[in-house]
Image (tube, rainbow, N blue to C red; front, top):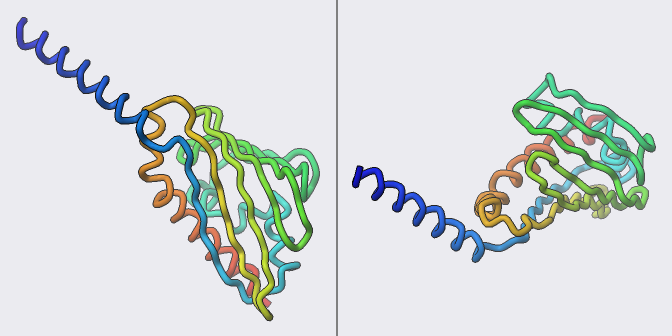
Length: 176
């Protein structure tokens, strides 16, 4: 019986220590990746401004071909919206909040199961015959100290997805 009590006390101390450390972790996160694509901004913008095009280059749809996707709102640009349900990629909603044709798409992203929300930008900058694409996503973890631990791995996990998706976008946009 004494061993069980010591184990329970140890678990309580571990949970409290984990929570206290969690409160010291940053509550914000930011992930950013860049690619230079040998295509004009107009061609790339057409691929990123319409949610129906994202499955052709987004790594998440490739990892789960069974992903259920629904599109709503505008066909492209501000007001375009899509939601998805996936056993491996989670359930989420993305809505384009602003669009500057051939220059930038801003979006809001949310995952209901975790309560996480973030804002993102895909910006296009011409560089001669190429276009620099900068993809940024940032948000807050909120007050939950345990969710803040995701911040320790957010850049490496999501960053890899951004890199692969940008590589797919590059391949698609550079096709003649």
